[in-house]
Image (tube, rainbow, N blue to C red):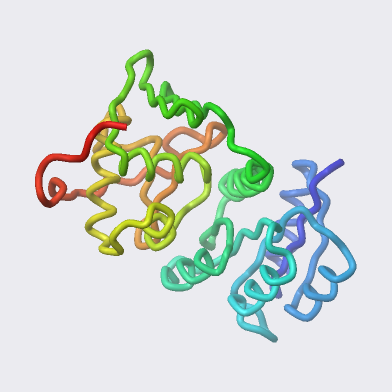
Length: 251
């Protein structure tokens, strides 16, 4: 059965674009032009995924997202946001959005985000034993990380960050979500240090990462296996060595 996508957007041209683009890829589409219509649809139907525009006429998009999460905690939600609204993206992700797409967007990018959100919904039923992409393999059961045939030694904290990213592959995680997931310091510099160390160990070219990607002003994303190589790649963060010198014992 085709996945059903609920599109919540008050702009008819955007709804038409999404209806046309998604239906050709096998998705079934239901539409709502307001928050009230969306909540009514959700009370009567069970879509597989929601595309939510944050700029609605009758309710703040973040408030609608909060209401959706309260009634449908496992329903994947991808939000549409303006290019300069980094604060709105972070707030939406912290409220439980699975991902975001910045307007104007390409259909290929949106489809990749939808696949990642649906894939993550299935993954919550159990961890994938081995994650593989571009020569990198992460065995979540045996805690073994390899690049090609070479075992990579990670510190316990590096592995903790990598494991969280693997479990949410394809999904952007905010700085706060990553730090909370590993019970680490909330200082942004602390996170940048560890992301840089992971890139040094896992990427072919740490300065032009293709696997561990930066979402500027928002957080990080581990590229999913079916994402286009390098599509989201941005220059790597620059950071100093970990304060205090040597890392902890290898995992």
